[in-house]
Image (cartoon, rainbow, N blue to C red):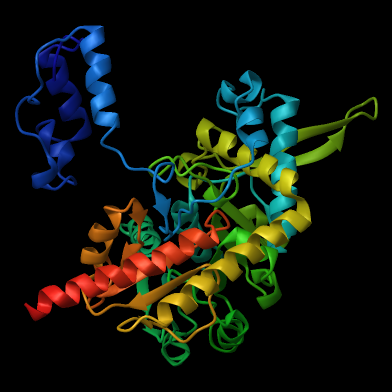
Length: 459
C-alpha cells in the first residue's frame, strides 16, 4: 500500500489484516488469476504537458473503429439502431444528466415520473404485469432472474439453453457460483433449444429454466412448447425468457407463452453502443412474484390535496433492508439509460416500433437471400429468424471479417469464438439503418472475398 494515498501505518495495516483473518494484502487477491495481476509498478512514461496529453489521447482515440465511421453488421446483443435526435437532447438536460443517485428517497418527482413511464412502457411491450425501474444490463438481469428462480422455487438447479447469448451464460454462471446453485446447459439442435433434451433434464428439482428468443443466432424459439414441458415436469420452476425488445413490435411477447420473468438488454431502445456500455437491464415479471423482484419499483399516487404524485414503493437495496437479502444494484447511469429508452419509446409510439421491427426483419431476410445465392455460402440453420442470422462459409470467418474491414465493413461475429467447431460460421445482424445499397455491397464484398480466398487456395 502507498502511504501517499492511504494514511495507515504498517502496524495499523497489520492490525486490520489480523482483524479480518488474513496474513497479507495479497491474500485478498486470491480470486484474481495470477496472470491478470501486475507485479511491481506500472510501466508509465514520465509526466507530459497538457498539450502533449491531448495529442496522445487523440492518437489513441483515432485507433478506434466504431459504427459511426463503419457499416456495421455486428449484433450479438448490441445493435446499430437509429437514435432519434430528441433522445440525446432530452437526456442531456442538466436535471437528468447530472442527477445524483436517482434511487434515493429524495429523488425528484420528474425523475420518478420518468421511471414510472418507463415501467409502464416495458409492461406494455412485454405483456408482463410489473417492470422494475431497470437493472445494470441484460446479462446481469438474467443472473438476477436465475437467483430469483431459486429463491421462489426453493430448488437449487437452473437450466439455461445453449442458444442464450454466451456472454449472458457466463454471467449467470458467475452469479450462481459460490451459492450452491447448479447451472446446467440445455444443448441445441439446428439452431434452437433441443426440446427432447429439455424434457429429459426437467424434474421437480429444477428451479428455473432460461431461454432466449430471438436467440443468439437470431432464431425464434417455440416458447409455448417449452412452457408446456415445464408445467408437466417442473411445475415449481420459473420460466425466464430473454428477448429483443424491438422484435416485440411484430412478434408475440413472451407473456403469451406464460413466461414468469422477461429480461432484455435495453441498449436497442435509444442507447448508444458506446464500445460496450453502460447499458440497461430490462426486467419484468408476473405480479404474484413482485415481492421477490430485484431492483426498485415506482408507483403513482395522490397527495393529501388530491394531486397526482410518484413514489418509490419497493426497493431491495442494502441501505434499506438486511444486506444478505438485498438484490438491487442500481446506479446513476442506469437511470439515465432507462430515461433514454423512455424517450425513444415515446418518440416512436406503437406504430413506430412496429415499423422499425418490420424494417429489421425485411432487410435481414433480403440480405440472407442474397448471401444464400452465393456459391459456397449456406444459411447455417433452417429456422424462422428475426434480424440476425448465421451463415456457413468455406473459409474461416475471421479471414472474412478482416478482409471486409479493409472496405470499412464490420462483417459480423465469428461464432468460433464462443462455439467449438464453428470457426467457419459468421453471425450477421441487420438493422433499419442499413440501406439497400449497403446490403448489396455487403453481398458483393463477401463474394469477392471468398473468390480471393479460393484463388489463394488453388495457388
